[in-house]
Length: 419
Image 1 (tube, rainbow, N blue to C red):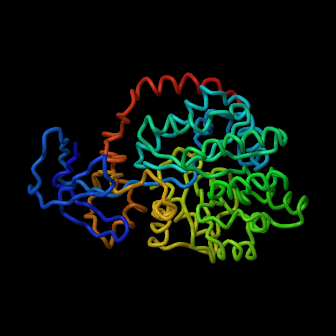
Image 2: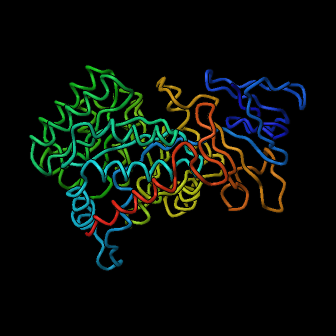
Image 3: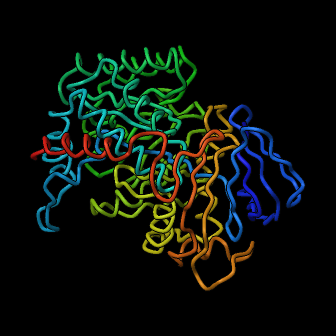
């Protein structure tokens, strides 16, 4: 059975060419077929969607999402005067971590997946980071996303805040998962990982030939404590451990790296995931990408879609020494899709699409498309989201699950967060 997107305008996401064609999408194969309007005759069982006046483009991928923290807005919000990075970690993230049992992890993942799908994201690179519910947690997060229709790349952020034994258990859970599924190994941050933990994770990366996802200098605290304990900066430590030798490795944030660290990154195939909304809300130093090429964009646990993330990346860059052009920021948005392709991960084939209306008074075209995405909030009103050839969102609602019942369950679980 195929899905026929009739009478729409297809936009090639890589070169932004606009193509007036009917698009035939099938779950069984990742490639698309194009026909002149009215040329394709629907077969028995085909589903037809009238896309007259609408646009069709490849869906989005999120390079860094923390689904276990998707319900964090239930927690206390600090004033500017009260906020510090350590307080944010200790009073919010670690307190939420203490109550993340099986039901709350599942609810949080389900909520993150619904939000992602509604905003046109069909692939998410996820970081899990609970110390309470470890065994089976990655499979549970993946299950929630799959129920909504979203593909994932999972990792577990091993952390020694609760001791090496807990971190080792997280590493073993991570390794067991990627022995059967695509995924990355994970470390929470350099300052929360001993030499022994680095060596353990590096060994698993070699065993499964996959990279690591790690917070790298999200805050100056990471640099200060790493220098104090190991006499080297964060990126040099990763460099020496061989964790940057993989083209699937993702260093997240990198707000507090120096010029020498940028040189290390530039000479390795690893990527940096910029999380502009999370950085802005935590009041951290603006990300400076000078000299860096392999930049991805992530939503962190903001709950925002990738278009909003791209907007924040563009405007926040104006406060750094490396302000971006519209071409640059769109390249970073689509670098997420290229990262998946380069690493041969599954779940982001051509049959992942969004269908959207342009409700602005301006006509879209190759020369102004990105401009309108950044400056005009009415230029992209999503009507359909298609993942692996199947409609997963219609008119703003996830349709592969009973959304009403799912949100009821999520609300019940969210009430357990009291920090």
